[in-house]
Length: 378
Image 1 (cartoon, rainbow, N blue to C red):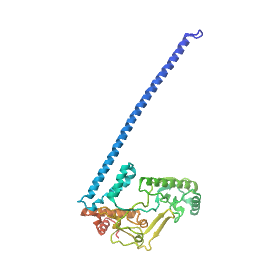
Image 2: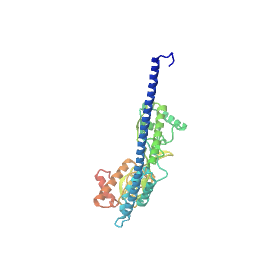
Image 3: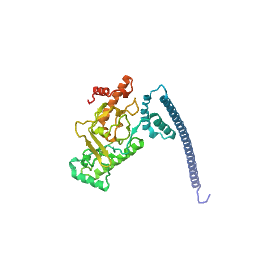
């Protein structure tokens, strides 16, 4: 010990050294314990991941097996000598389920099975046009001070925004037939077109949603920053998804033509009325409405247009009616879809009661039953 260092000082220094050494040892042990715990957790998670992968492999294999079995059973059902050809029509429902879930089936072999089920077992035709009406995205903007809105002023501001690219074509659906004040009067609502509106697949629905919401946000920002009286507007309602005006349609025993609709053909097998005008939306112009020459002309929907061609025990209703796309523009309204649905519900009920294919039920009986339950007389 140096002469100038007291024994007490030396002991104090020694205690500090031993304390620091002990602290370091404890810290090391804690670190090692924590590292060991992490390793154990990682191993456990790895085991869980491996187990999950094994389970998924089993599920995919089971799905393959079940689909193969289903295909074999259905093929046997359809080719059995004791079966009537018409009894395969119930499989259209299976096709609809397949189409709705197709985007979730990514396994190549499952896709192959589904494609074979579509092509070989169903074989019911559909109609589809390359050019389709724009869809729509609905929302509502509130807080507009309408007493500050001057029609000519807001029209000028809107036109300038379209010219300088602040707004885009389709942000307002009706530029060819209505002033921009109409959009403000309705708080947006159903005044926005969606051009990418093929909602028949999950991917198409997502694309339509994204386009619609982008248009909504652009219009909201434009109103808040540029339109007098809209400085404090709020986006009050935003619908969960964009909607399409047309996608696929059934290829029916009869296809309603544009001439049928415009001339209000009085079909022998009519089951409900349609609108008396054509409401045709387009990317080129916006929206064009064509009325019939006379208010006495009221188009009808024939039963044959709701029977898929070649089927006997299935009917359709709504926007998948068998019709030319221009005729569809006057048929697709909700009230007409409701009337078709009620008529086909009546057809199904009568078919069950009589133990006969639905296509063999007379349209007059269908009409009588719907009128009995409150439908409009034809």
